[in-house]
Image (cartoon, rainbow over all chains, first blue to last red; front, side):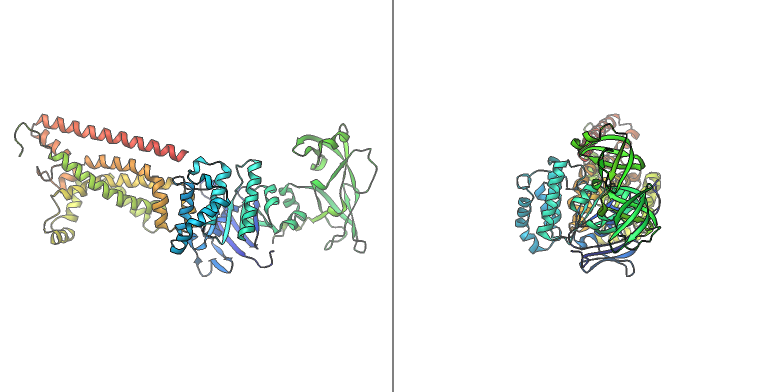
Amino acid sequence: MTDVPVIDARVVKRFVPEGGSEAFELNVHLRAGRGITVLLGANGAGKTQMLNSLAGFLRPDEGRILVNDQLFFDGETGVHLSPQQRECGYIFQDHALFPHMTIRENLRFAAGARGDRARRRNGRKRINDLLETFELADLAARRPQQLSGGQKQRAAIARALIGNPRLLLLDEPARGLDARLRQGFYRVLQKTRERLDVPVVLVTHDVEECFELADTVCFMEAGRFLQSGPKEQVFARPRSAEIARSLGLYDIFPAEIVELDPARNTSKLKVFDRAIQGPYLPGHLIGDRGNICVRSSDVRVLPPNAPIAQNQIELRVMSRAPSSHGVRLTLEHDITGVVAGTDYERLRGFATLYVELPQSGINFLDNTAGAATE
Amino acid sequence: MPAPGSLDWFPLWLSLRVASIATILVLVIGTGAAYLLSHKTFRGKELLDSLITLPLVLPPTVLGYYLLIVIGRASPLGRIYENVFGAPLVFTWKAAVIAAFLHSAPIYTKAARAVLESVDYRYEWAAHSLGASEWRTFWRVTLPLARRGLSSLAMLSFARSLGDFGVTIMVAGNIPGRTQTLSVAIYDAVESGNGRTARTLVLVVSAVSIALLSCAGYFSRVSRASTAG
């Protein structure tokens, strides 16, 4: 899916400190194919600035933005297309539906905005189609203030799609929606992508949302991409312990490689003075120190009286707290395990527990790899 | 000259006409300048801003004197006007319009700039992204969203135009039945000991001003309520 990049954007933008904000440099190279690209990161990582650079609201200091072989921006030749020329559909955080117009008028404004007559003539049918598609037909005469969050969301997407945008850009679109509306919105977005084949760039700080929607993930921090690639790859193999920690989905153990066996495709690692079997780790040497990271959901928590098997580590229980999936156990060395409520009964009352790491799920991270980007 | 005993209402009508035309000019020119100041970055922006503020700080007589130099019969502008229209501009009611304009435009422009800046830029960005030109965005998005704020300013502007004295008397003079506006007529009445005329005109001006103020207050309340929602 990502063989030919539809978006190839290198953006450098320096922000001078003003009014309490610190100096900040956005410096990223985004390559994305069709499908949904998610810019994931905490607040202040520069995600929205990147989106604004793509849309043409922000002029980068350096770089080059190519979308579908059309040059949007080139720092060297001074090309900088206006937002109008870029034809991006932009969904703002609070939707930015015009409050003085009804929903139909909002769509009509969008249909007539490019001022080309043929498009305007076809406008009415297209407006009706989109109102129908996004289940807004009954709400067309209402003002945005009279709609719920989910309805506004759909209206904003419908409005953005009227002009057949080359890109659909969404800034924290699911913020403020409850879980049910979120699911509804995800469905709408998936449907949009399938029907229209428009590349989507979505900004979020929500790992779950990223997991649900992304084809490509770019993990951002302090104006840079720490890691980007297909979602499966990024989530299966975070490039550094820092990324793994930020994603918050992993348990991270300090480890040292003591054996590597390419023939049997295995390795042996020393974790908290215990030997752990892992998969063969190409590109690493015996004696390398670093961390292993394992998806928290892959870590099994066992009572101390369970039959002894390999890859088990004994850890003291620090605290327990209820979580949406059952009980979250925090063990020493900041290891967490989530167990279902029914399984928890077997673990109740023990001061130490065993965690079992699945051999295939072990991902070794060099201490040095954290520094590498792109 | 009106018959003794009856009140001459000419100054009221003249003032209303002068203030109306001046307000229209302020709306067009002032809103344009406010848009430039609020939405554009260009060289000389600070200079333009100072130039707009200048009439606020200069004494009216000084402003009037400058105006006489710029549009007087000896000035190039004055001569061009005289050639085109066949009569001088100074000491006519049209000069009073210019005086009233200068009296209210600076305040209007400064406040309108704040109103236009308070329109959430995301609406304008959204319009641009949808392909709407800047012109279309201004007319269909920015202006409607700023409408109430600007209306209330326009009313204040009208009230202020109604009340100019200093510049008016410098460039339009005090010609009863031709250039004598309300403020000038009141001054004239007081000077000539015509207490009844002075009192009546003062009450009229006060009533009109209070009415306009309360309208403006209503509009700005509605405007605040609608942007807060």
